[in-house]
Length: 66
Length: 128
Image (tube, rainbow over all chains, first blue to last red; front, side):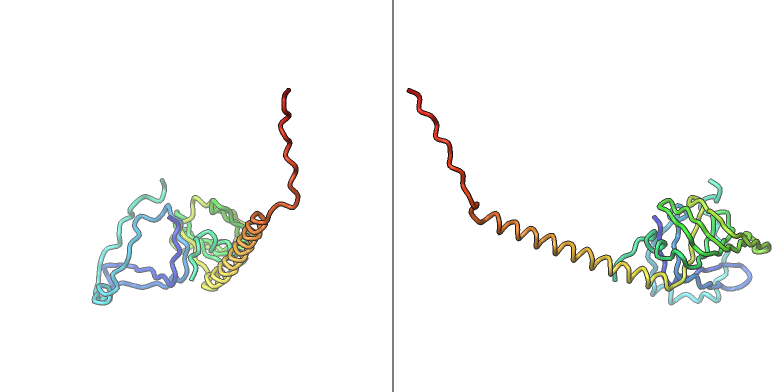
């Protein structure tokens, strides 16, 4: 399930500050590292104030060394 | 807008600079020289950054096994180039199809014409 993402951004969650957005541009992601692929609800996204969101980083869904 | 498959997008990115992050978390930034269907990759003039971002290495030539790659970061121009090449390919395919159709029609019209020479059929010999 190799993926191509255009105008992509990386979201970094942390407990100290709000969500950071890193611009990642055009990406090709190798399928075997993909755990979930889904459509984003843009209306719901707009209603979230990401500056106030403080959350722990997601734990790895599978280990890197398998 | 034509759909482009990930590996064909990578093929069009050949010769340009890419960033590859491997599953171990290290990143390699270099010129993409070679690529195969397993996503094995040859890079030249590589800058290697460790996972924590503290140590850097310069590497002249490097082969990465496709298996160990997490993702590529590409120049946005690569997408435009791939789009153009896909359009050219599509046009070529359409032209081929048209030619095939014309040939088929020609053959059909030839088949409808009566054959040039009809051979006399052998009469069965009458037995006495």
